[in-house]
Image 1 (cartoon, one colour):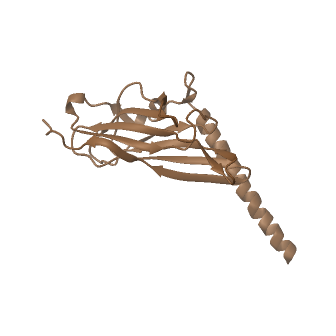
Image 2 (spheres, one colour; image 1 turned 180 degrees about the vertical axis):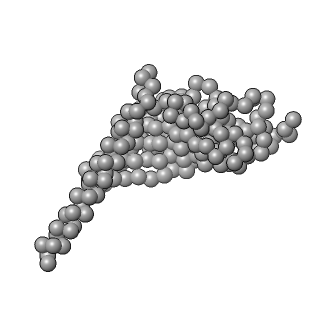
Image 3 (tube, one colour; image 1 turned 90 degrees about the vertical axis):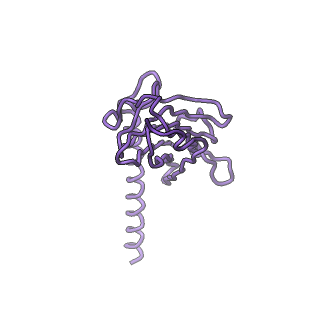
Length: 196
Protein backbone atom coordinates (compact mmCIF):
# COMPACT_ATOMS: atom_id res chain seq x y z
CA UNK A 1 0.00 0.00 0.00
CA UNK A 2 2.77 2.42 0.95
CA UNK A 3 4.64 1.61 -2.29
CA UNK A 4 1.51 2.45 -4.29
CA UNK A 5 1.13 5.80 -2.47
CA UNK A 6 4.79 6.64 -3.11
CA UNK A 7 4.41 5.74 -6.78
CA UNK A 8 1.37 8.04 -7.07
CA UNK A 9 3.25 10.92 -5.39
CA UNK A 10 6.21 10.43 -7.71
CA UNK A 11 3.89 10.28 -10.72
CA UNK A 12 2.22 13.58 -9.71
CA UNK A 13 5.63 15.18 -9.18
CA UNK A 14 6.83 14.05 -12.61
CA UNK A 15 3.66 15.40 -14.23
CA UNK A 16 4.16 18.76 -12.50
CA UNK A 17 7.79 18.90 -13.67
CA UNK A 18 6.78 17.92 -17.20
CA UNK A 19 4.14 20.67 -17.19
CA UNK A 20 6.68 23.27 -16.07
CA UNK A 21 9.21 22.11 -18.67
CA UNK A 22 6.54 22.33 -21.36
CA UNK A 23 5.51 25.80 -20.17
CA UNK A 24 9.13 27.00 -20.09
CA UNK A 25 9.63 25.60 -23.60
CA UNK A 26 6.48 27.34 -24.83
CA UNK A 27 7.61 30.66 -23.32
CA UNK A 28 11.01 30.21 -24.98
CA UNK A 29 9.44 29.42 -28.35
CA UNK A 30 7.00 32.32 -28.08
CA UNK A 31 9.86 34.69 -27.35
CA UNK A 32 11.83 33.41 -30.35
CA UNK A 33 9.05 33.71 -32.93
CA UNK A 34 8.63 36.77 -35.12
CA UNK A 35 11.56 38.66 -33.60
CA UNK A 36 12.77 42.08 -34.58
CA UNK A 37 16.47 41.37 -35.10
CA UNK A 38 17.56 44.85 -34.07
CA UNK A 39 16.02 44.65 -30.60
CA UNK A 40 15.89 40.93 -29.95
CA UNK A 41 12.25 41.13 -28.84
CA UNK A 42 8.99 40.19 -30.50
CA UNK A 43 7.67 43.18 -32.49
CA UNK A 44 4.16 44.02 -31.22
CA UNK A 45 3.22 45.69 -34.50
CA UNK A 46 3.83 42.38 -36.27
CA UNK A 47 2.38 40.06 -33.63
CA UNK A 48 -0.80 42.10 -33.09
CA UNK A 49 -1.38 43.64 -36.52
CA UNK A 50 -4.97 42.34 -36.55
CA UNK A 51 -5.68 44.20 -33.28
CA UNK A 52 -4.43 47.57 -34.53
CA UNK A 53 -5.61 50.54 -36.54
CA UNK A 54 -3.80 53.74 -37.52
CA UNK A 55 -3.88 56.21 -34.62
CA UNK A 56 -6.63 58.81 -34.65
CA UNK A 57 -5.55 62.45 -35.26
CA UNK A 58 -4.16 64.15 -32.17
CA UNK A 59 -6.65 67.01 -32.51
CA UNK A 60 -9.47 64.52 -31.83
CA UNK A 61 -8.09 63.24 -28.50
CA UNK A 62 -10.14 64.47 -25.56
CA UNK A 63 -9.21 61.81 -23.00
CA UNK A 64 -5.61 60.99 -22.09
CA UNK A 65 -3.99 58.82 -19.49
CA UNK A 66 -0.65 57.51 -18.27
CA UNK A 67 -0.46 54.16 -16.51
CA UNK A 68 2.45 52.94 -14.35
CA UNK A 69 2.84 49.14 -14.36
CA UNK A 70 5.34 47.37 -12.06
CA UNK A 71 7.12 44.57 -13.95
CA UNK A 72 9.57 42.65 -11.82
CA UNK A 73 12.63 41.41 -13.74
CA UNK A 74 13.68 39.39 -10.70
CA UNK A 75 12.70 38.72 -7.08
CA UNK A 76 14.78 37.57 -4.12
CA UNK A 77 14.00 34.22 -2.54
CA UNK A 78 14.66 32.62 0.83
CA UNK A 79 17.40 34.46 2.70
CA UNK A 80 17.63 37.11 -0.02
CA UNK A 81 20.78 35.71 -1.64
CA UNK A 82 19.04 33.85 -4.45
CA UNK A 83 17.49 35.74 -7.37
CA UNK A 84 14.64 34.34 -9.44
CA UNK A 85 14.71 35.81 -12.95
CA UNK A 86 11.23 36.50 -14.31
CA UNK A 87 9.84 36.88 -17.80
CA UNK A 88 7.37 39.75 -17.96
CA UNK A 89 4.43 40.24 -20.30
CA UNK A 90 2.78 43.67 -20.46
CA UNK A 91 -0.87 43.24 -21.45
CA UNK A 92 -2.91 46.18 -22.78
CA UNK A 93 -6.64 45.65 -23.34
CA UNK A 94 -9.12 48.08 -24.82
CA UNK A 95 -12.28 47.56 -22.76
CA UNK A 96 -14.47 49.74 -24.99
CA UNK A 97 -16.73 47.90 -27.39
CA UNK A 98 -17.23 50.98 -29.61
CA UNK A 99 -14.15 53.23 -29.51
CA UNK A 100 -10.49 52.68 -30.51
CA UNK A 101 -7.84 53.21 -27.80
CA UNK A 102 -4.82 55.17 -29.05
CA UNK A 103 -1.53 53.93 -27.59
CA UNK A 104 0.84 56.88 -27.79
CA UNK A 105 3.90 55.24 -26.26
CA UNK A 106 5.17 52.34 -24.18
CA UNK A 107 8.41 52.69 -22.23
CA UNK A 108 10.30 50.17 -20.11
CA UNK A 109 12.28 51.67 -17.18
CA UNK A 110 14.99 50.38 -14.85
CA UNK A 111 15.30 50.67 -11.06
CA UNK A 112 16.94 54.11 -11.38
CA UNK A 113 14.05 55.49 -13.45
CA UNK A 114 16.06 55.48 -16.69
CA UNK A 115 14.45 54.35 -19.94
CA UNK A 116 15.69 50.92 -21.03
CA UNK A 117 13.53 50.60 -24.14
CA UNK A 118 10.76 52.32 -26.13
CA UNK A 119 8.44 49.88 -27.87
CA UNK A 120 6.39 51.85 -30.40
CA UNK A 121 8.01 54.00 -33.09
CA UNK A 122 4.71 55.86 -33.59
CA UNK A 123 1.24 55.93 -32.00
CA UNK A 124 -1.16 53.13 -32.91
CA UNK A 125 -4.79 52.44 -32.01
CA UNK A 126 -6.24 49.26 -30.58
CA UNK A 127 -9.57 48.26 -32.09
CA UNK A 128 -12.57 48.04 -29.74
CA UNK A 129 -12.14 45.05 -27.38
CA UNK A 130 -8.70 44.30 -28.88
CA UNK A 131 -5.50 43.58 -26.97
CA UNK A 132 -1.75 43.64 -27.43
CA UNK A 133 1.27 42.70 -25.36
CA UNK A 134 4.97 43.33 -24.91
CA UNK A 135 7.23 40.46 -23.81
CA UNK A 136 10.51 40.80 -21.88
CA UNK A 137 12.56 37.60 -21.57
CA UNK A 138 13.63 36.30 -18.15
CA UNK A 139 17.28 36.58 -19.20
CA UNK A 140 16.85 40.33 -19.86
CA UNK A 141 17.97 41.80 -16.53
CA UNK A 142 18.71 45.32 -17.85
CA UNK A 143 15.93 46.88 -15.78
CA UNK A 144 16.72 45.21 -12.45
CA UNK A 145 14.32 44.60 -9.56
CA UNK A 146 12.52 47.95 -9.91
CA UNK A 147 11.54 47.41 -13.54
CA UNK A 148 8.33 49.03 -14.73
CA UNK A 149 6.44 50.12 -17.82
CA UNK A 150 4.61 53.34 -18.53
CA UNK A 151 1.81 53.33 -21.08
CA UNK A 152 0.47 56.58 -22.54
CA UNK A 153 -2.97 56.42 -24.11
CA UNK A 154 -5.65 58.71 -25.55
CA UNK A 155 -9.17 58.49 -26.96
CA UNK A 156 -11.28 60.66 -29.23
CA UNK A 157 -14.27 60.56 -26.89
CA UNK A 158 -15.60 59.01 -23.71
CA UNK A 159 -14.03 55.60 -23.15
CA UNK A 160 -13.88 53.02 -20.40
CA UNK A 161 -10.58 52.70 -18.58
CA UNK A 162 -8.25 50.21 -20.33
CA UNK A 163 -6.98 47.16 -18.47
CA UNK A 164 -3.18 47.35 -18.33
CA UNK A 165 -1.22 44.83 -16.26
CA UNK A 166 1.95 42.79 -16.27
CA UNK A 167 2.24 39.06 -15.79
CA UNK A 168 5.50 37.66 -14.44
CA UNK A 169 6.58 34.03 -14.82
CA UNK A 170 9.69 32.25 -13.61
CA UNK A 171 10.96 28.74 -13.00
CA UNK A 172 13.59 27.64 -10.51
CA UNK A 173 14.32 23.94 -10.38
CA UNK A 174 10.97 22.19 -10.34
CA UNK A 175 9.07 25.15 -8.88
CA UNK A 176 7.17 27.60 -11.06
CA UNK A 177 6.24 31.12 -9.97
CA UNK A 178 3.75 33.52 -11.50
CA UNK A 179 1.94 36.67 -10.45
CA UNK A 180 0.12 39.66 -11.87
CA UNK A 181 0.80 43.34 -11.24
CA UNK A 182 -2.04 45.77 -11.99
CA UNK A 183 -1.27 49.10 -13.64
CA UNK A 184 -2.12 52.33 -11.82
CA UNK A 185 -3.19 55.53 -13.47
CA UNK A 186 -0.65 58.19 -12.50
CA UNK A 187 -1.53 61.04 -14.80
CA UNK A 188 -4.33 62.00 -17.09
CA UNK A 189 -7.32 64.13 -17.68
CA UNK A 190 -10.76 62.85 -18.59
CA UNK A 191 -13.17 64.90 -20.70
CA UNK A 192 -10.93 68.01 -20.85
CA UNK A 193 -12.81 69.41 -23.82
CA UNK A 194 -15.89 68.47 -25.77
CA UNK A 195 -15.71 66.44 -28.95
CA UNK A 196 -16.25 68.46 -32.12
